[in-house]
Structure formats: structure tokens, C-alpha cells
Length: 421
Image (tube, rainbow, N blue to C red; front, side, top):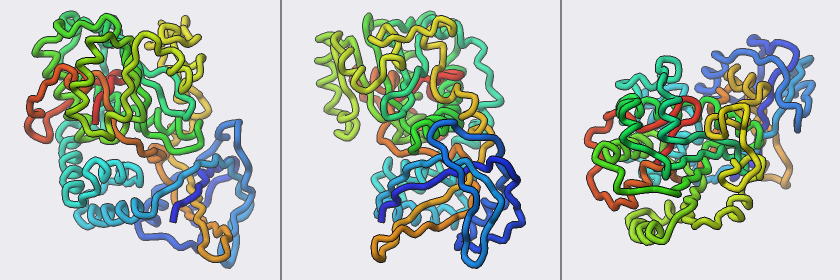
């Protein structure tokens, strides 16, 4: 049965007592997670909030607690929930479920990537954990500093800028302005790949949780815009192709199912011919998300993105003059101080609403589980970006990089470069 919604309640004024004897039906892992939770303070967003002054429970009540609650819509498919539960139990039995990855939507994304084949999904998951351990991915946000970011931006313009009308972060690349020779003079393939991975990690730690709070629904997928104006395929050599292949492998193996929609703008006739050929090598589910547009793309983009969220060079009204331009601004809900206070605090108190099967009444089960806000995420389908796209259009049919743990794709400090997963 679908779950119509859930509330993320943030403690507003008083400490949530760790000793409160809540008589609630919880699983062992929920009890364990609750034990490591810490209280939250401060207000959440000023918009669309409501106060819950007390929580009733069976045989008693938790009184004198005030919460500011953000309603997060979360509708789940019953069959998918069943598959996720089985996958989760299998991982727990193998001791392969670190708490930071113990999230419904993360598990579901991996299941979708392997078409719900449990054995293949478990293998993919274990390869992902090994890759993270071998490459220090869990601490890459803190440990890696991409000093050459500004120089890279000059020859590879890219970045996050705003959200679409559904709340997904918008990621933009001007791949027609990439100067590969100059790029490889200011950075190295390995550092660029680390930057790429760091960008993905920041998206899951900050951008997706912030977008989820702002949109009041789970978000963990991106709307991508690739501007191919001026693109010269002959300028991409072996090094660039190698970089693209490694980026694609990292994204597909470790960050699957994260593209909402992709719009390729300023595509000429030759480009469209290449795309029509390349799409034959792609899964129909992927091609359905990719829209190749010519130079009259403005109306289409404005259907999905507000003008204020779109740079002027794409038909919007934003120029971000005080931030060095739109692609350097990193504009989005993740720049909202109030939202980021909650994101950085790291924990939220979930109250899931489940529909009663009797008399269509709504039964509310209060689950006192404190869950990392980074776990607020949503499932989309595939991520495709410059790396994957350029590989496909060039019709490169080479094998993916061998070995499940070869490091790195490409990403950016605050704005990471994205690719196909």
C-alpha cells in the first residue's frame, strides 16, 4: 500500500528526552538509529510550517515538546517496498549496510539499476562499498581541495544554478566552450575525477536534502542542461575520451538512477544526426529523458524552469553579477541559511503516515527514529552528462574501464560535473 506522506519534525524549543519511554512499535535497527540521534534546535523554514505541541502515544504521551514540522510527501509503491525490504535484510545479514547508506531510496536506486535482480544488486552494492573504501570517498568532501577550480572554470564552464519547477537542482555545462588542451594543463585526470566524485558527495549531503526541504518532497535527481553551441568533436582526443569513460563508469556503478531530465540545446543538424544514431545504443528509459533541441529552445526550458532560475544565456533573467556569473554562483536552496542549518545538524525526526485498511481511516504511527537529513532523497532514473553523452555521440563502443574500483569521474567543488549512470 502506498505511503501518502510523512512529516519531518524538527524540535523547536526543548530537548527531546533520550530517556522518554516511547511505547512504539519499532524494529531493532530503528532502536539503534534512535540511540545515536541527537536533538535538533532552531526553526525550520518559515514557509509551510506547523507546530506540533505534543505527541500522543499508546498508554501515555510525550508532552511539552514543540516541533516545527515540514510535510514531506513520500508515496511508495508496495512492490518496490517489498523488494527494498528483502534487499535490506540481505545486506544486514552480510554486514554490508553502513548506517550512512541505510536509506530506502538509496537501496531502491541500486535495485532499479539492476532491474530488481537481488543477486546482481548485492554484487553492485558490495563493489560500491569496496570502491568507496579503497578511494577514501567517505571523507573526500573534507579531505580533498580542488585548488585549480577557477582555472578549470575558464576552460570548462559548468555548475549548478537554481531548481526546476518541480524542485530538482539544475546542473549546466557549456560543453561547446570546453578547451581540452588547456584543461589538461591546469589539472590532471586523477584530480579532475576526485573533484567529480566530491561533487556527487556534496549533492547527496547538501543539495538534495536542501531541495527536498524546499520542495517538501524527496529529491535526489537532477535536471541537466548541456549547451553544445560551438562544439568541435575533433578537439576531443584520447585523454578526453579516457576521462569520459572513467566518469561514466564511476557514475553508473556508484551513483545510479539520478537523472531527472536532460536538455541538449543549440544542437545543429549534424549533431542531431549523430544523436539519432547514438540513441540506438541506449536503454529506451534513458532516451526518454533526453531532449535534443536546436537554437529555439527557450520556450521549452521556460516550461520547466522559472526565468529567475535560468541564466540569461539560456533565455532566463538571471546573471548573478555579484557571484562571478551564474555557473560560479552555485545558486539554489542549499544556499539558504535556514535550510542549511537543518541540513548541517544532520538529523530529523520522522513521523510516517500510513493508511489504515479499515474504513478508510488514517492511522498515524509515530516512529521515534532520528534519521540523517542526507537520507531525504528521491528516486529518478538515469544520470547522463557530458561524459556519457560525448561518449555516445562519438559512438565509442569501447569496453568500460576494467575493475570495479578504478577511481573517478569528474566533478566540481561546489558544482560537480555530472554524467550518465
